[in-house]
Amino acid sequence: MKKLLLVLIGLALFLGISYLIIAHEPTPEYYPERNYITDQEDMILTNFLLAKDSSVIEIPAGHFSISKSIIINGLTNVTIRGKGMEKSVLSFKGQTEGAEGLRITNGKNITVEDLTLEDAAGDVIKAMDCDGLTFRRVTAAATGKTESSNPAYLFYPVLSKNILIEECVAIGASDAGIYVGQSSNVVVRNNHVYYNVAGIESENCGNVKIYGNDVHENVSGILAFDLPGLARYGKNVEIYNNKIYNNNISSFAPKGSIVGEVPSGNGMLIMSSDSIYVHDNEFIDNRTMDIAISSYLTAANDNTDATPQQASTSDNAITQARLNQMAAQTAGISNAIKKDKNYNPFPRRIMIKNNSYQCDRWFPTIHNDFGILMLYASFLKHVNIVWDGQRAEDYLMPDGSVKPIYQICIEEKEGIRFIDADVGNDLANLSKDISKHQCNF
Image 1 (spheres, rainbow, N blue to C red):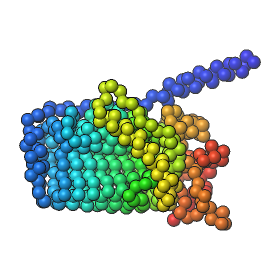
Image 2: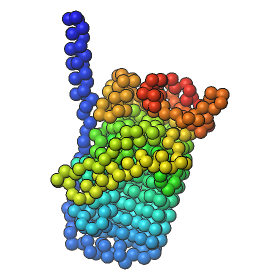
Image 3: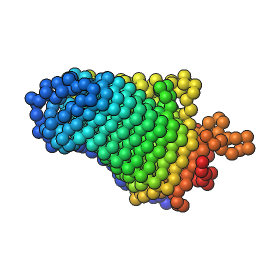
């Protein structure tokens, strides 16, 4: 009995020390040096109001305070050009009119380059219903502490086509730093993305290439997924030659949001997507897992009870509206899976090949279910690829082989750690056997 007691005390001490080691998740802050000019707003806004097709709108050097949304609507071949990311800065801190910082709608061949936009009341840059969007050498950021009242999205093009986002910087989004939704023919390359909940996110997009990006110190690095009930489904996303490292910060996503279910310490999430090719990326020190492959069913089950949260008295009305919106959106998505008869919630035709993995961390985070699962399934051993193991009813062919549409193929060097979590059966058939996924298509 005394020996057992000593063992239990030792185990308790070990777990206590382990908790202190693994509980720390950094909460970064971003405070750039600014010297605001307050008397140039009318001149800058007038240049936008007078813009016509083929206009070049020049943003002078300086750090300018802007109190209203800047809107470009229905124009063609327009360029918005600053003098450099650190030279031309538009700050929307204290914004009193509009939600977005820069809003572009119904445009064609719109280019934004060589400037910084910060601290919009809502999304920093939002573009809708456009054909031809280029963001080049643009910083979009939320300054100060990383918290749920930060702008949800920094770069936010949706329902558009022919999009290029290159050599940009995204800092501090409470949802995604670079987000592209329900769009086609997208290139996201050579960007620097950090201090966001999700670094780069492709949602319900087709023909997407994400490459050459430096993605670090986010909650999760790169996400590619499909949700139900939207205007289009995604397909053909290629993610390659990215450096994805140290994505371990504490989550500051609004409660009830889908992205809030993504665990800290996750390099990449692939959810309910079709034809995803992940290759030649470098994963370093993402302490929960490098790549997670999930069905939407896993996320939806965790969100069925989402309700609006009450903002603190220090939060403004926009923050409260944002929390209510996210909770309503999540509840709507949970119901949409039942209504969208054409939506397939399972990952399909996934290829993972020639990536490199390195992690010196012993412990995953324990602040989310995935982290606890990793601790349970692979104690003191970092896991590279995790599949939730949710299987469609028609997952197998009559001969017992996997139907080609549901193949998850992994061609990596020997020694990587893989888990099929079998979440749908409460981990009853959890497996570490990767041999069933050594395929090609």
